[in-house]
Amino acid sequence: MKAINMKAAVLAGIIAGLIFLVLEMVMVPLFLGGSPWGPPRMIGAIALGKGVLPPPATFDIGVVLVAIVLHMILSIVYAAVIGFLVKGMTLTKALAVGAVIGLVIYFVNFYVMTGIFPWFAMARNWVSAFAHVSFGIGAAWAYKGLQEHHTTHENPSAKTI
Image 1 (tube, rainbow, N blue to C red):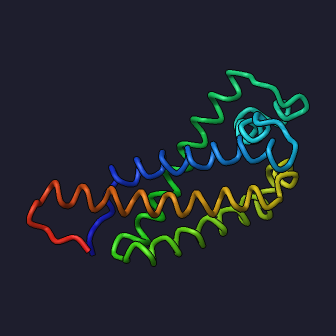
Image 2 (image 1 turned 180 degrees about the vertical axis):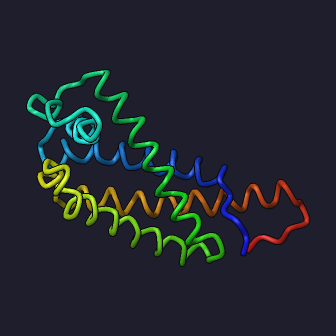
């Protein structure tokens, strides 16, 4: 069994994590009327405590930096899991698996983890579900592309499927 490409997993996690953050920060104000700083504050509150939660959902550099670091660490871990699961799949199957894993992460975060982080319950909505599914698809897509890129650059005679 071939090992996961950790460089591809790390980069896929960063790419998918950024996709997620952009979607949340654009879609929350656009479709839900909330602040773009609400999602980073909810993430930051995992490490900083619920005192950083909105209101006010305004920009705070400390909260945003903590949120980004924590979110990227989690995104890399999740992308490594996705990479492990999709490494031998076709791109189409990998994207489907990524979507399902994204949905599973959504349900775990917003229905299981609310026992530890009760403020997650306020983000049970279609925007969060969409962003999580997009994260999973993005992670699978990026991992497969990066895995293929690294394989062909490390071994130029390798066949790509």
